[in-house]
Amino acid sequence: MKQLKKLTRDQKEFLEKERLNPNDFLIERATPEEYVFYNKYTEVLWTYDRTMGVWLWVKKHLNYYYLTVMLLCGAKEGGLYGEYLYT
Image (cartoon, rainbow, N blue to C red; front, side, top):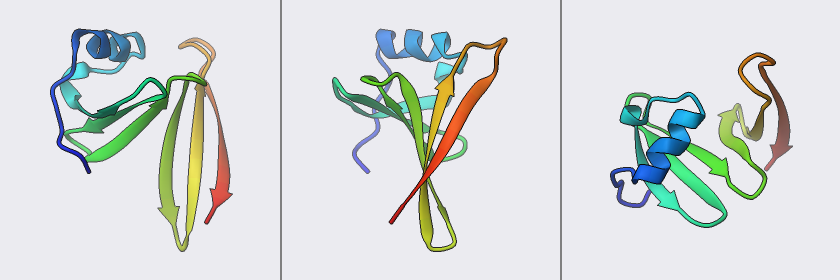
C-alpha cells in the first residue's frame, strides 16, 4: 500500500456527494482513472472507477476473489450491484 495522504477539497466534496463522511477516509491513490480511498475505521481500501462512475470492491471468499461492482442509482432507488468471479 502506498503512503496515505489527506484528502483534497475536491475529494472531500466527491465523498460528500456520495453521502460518505470525508473524515473517515484518507487517499491512497488518485489517478485520472480511479480514486483509492482508505477507510480509517474499517482499514479497507475503497476503489472508485472514475471512468465508469462505479465503486469497485475486491473481496476474498474461500479461495476465490470476487470483484463487486456497485452501481449507485440515487438514494431513493437504492443501489444495484453485481459480482464477477476471477482468479
